[in-house]
Amino acid sequence: MQVKFYCYVPEEKSEEVIECGLRLGDCVTRNVSINGTDTLCFEAYLHPNDAENVSTGNVLIKISAPDGHSYIADNSLLMDSTEDLYEKSVMPARDYRLGRYRKPCCLISCTVLPDMIERYNPDMDEPLLYQSSEQLYRDSLFYRTDDLAASFKDVALNAYYNMKAAAGEYAVQFNDEYAAFSDRSTGEIIAIVKIKFSQEKG
Image (cartoon, rainbow, N blue to C red; front, side):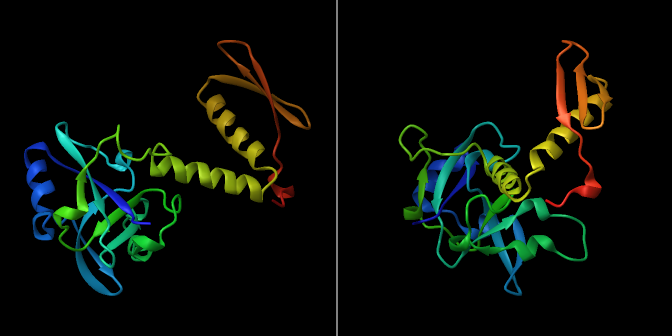
């Protein structure tokens, strides 16, 4: 199945882009080492909601990913480090599985021709089955970890309500087995299994 990317372009340039295509030299945003070669690319997204700080008046277009010139990297791995985890994450778009990266960014390393571009129409296009790539990643990771560790839900609940207690929203009392979190505003009491990390075996 053809991979589709999403990209925002200024409204005043949208008709030109749809009719003439996107020239790589006009829209380069990143120089990435791909298979050991420095490669100029421009960035797009797997989901419209993945884009951040989108200017008002921009138009959303869909791009059919050019085979052999389309990659996906994980933008959550962009960090100051001698070991470049971001560039290690770069893979061909055709090999990417939805939910694999927290912040997948699509890298296109060629000019995109007009027949590979169309204006996005939320009423006519295929439905988007998830809210954003980050939400899909988080949910997938949560369910996968829950399958691996029987105690995971209790660990997660402990972390959340201890954070709330540290913020002063809950009072907490303990017995040998449970922590009782009392909501200071409503009086509701929530009992959560105490986690003994030294005994955890997953």
